[in-house]
Image (cartoon, rainbow, N blue to C red; front, side, top):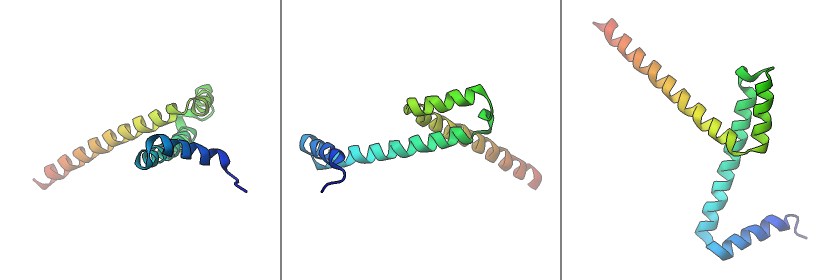
Length: 101
């Protein structure tokens, strides 16, 4: 008795159409996108700016209905955090060199 017949046939169809390495790459890409989707939803839900606002509920609805939205939000949030950390790191280095003189 096969408990998961549909995913098995889907992967088998991919394997027959694209071969082993392409199927492996497609499956890994789908897993990574699913993880990014869940991480984006968690980040949007935990965002303190959206607490108790109508926009927060809209964001949550968009997260569930449009899976690319949380992925784009996650990437943009990572870029914003990188820029902020880079800016603070540069300012700290400049202050350290000024205090050394």
